[in-house]
Image 1: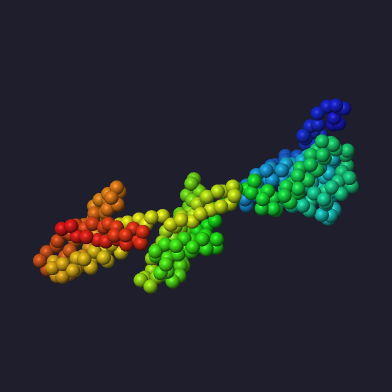
Image 2: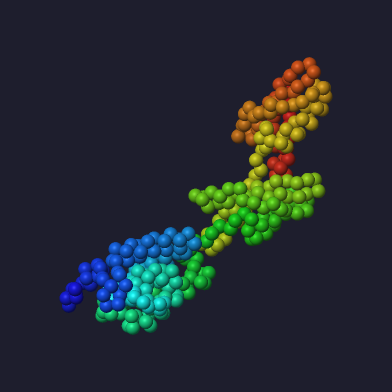
Length: 316
């Protein structure tokens, strides 16, 4: 069916809905061709998006594939029986290779289209194929430069173990009282990533002459548009009443008392309360002695928060 002069060009005309093997063409199924292009479009969109390709580039690439498919369809480009040529592919094939490897398939299609087509085709689809393909190639070149790419692709916050974060964190640590005595810093790892706040929380170990100190740190944007981020060490959290360091210090305190000197074992540590306003924790444990079990209450509070020093007191 030929389009009347001045009539709008149909996407897929009815005379292409099915073609037989007559005339040297392989069997041609319109539903299968259309389904193949649709599946290829979905795969291209999802896979390229996961790779971090800008959406505008993905959209243009998919459109180029769709327009190539429509142009080849209306130009009567078909797969021929008995031909082993790499160019012997169906409209669906051209659409798929455009989406998958446009930088190669577009020049090939550009110079071989007149030889492959068996019908005049539609100028509109031929023009759209060229325009979308050229836009993809031009935009790919532009986005290869950091400046223009930053306008379309938001900068990604560096990980807690990245080289730039480790280097900046080292400067921050050595500007603190603890860092002044640090011999080395190691064990950088990411603990958590808050996607909504776009903030990363990491942890490392600072090795000092007095022992190892676990330091938590935060990586967040200072100015995302300019690609500037910052690393800061939040105020340390007061250890819980059941933490290893509190339990060890508490045992030293208990065994320094007359009752504790006779203690066989100490267990049952638990946190009773936490006063957020004063940053004070209250706990309780059981001291087992020959004379019986004794419940001991204790508090955990800061001695010097900036230096990460805390103390444990027995209240009764």
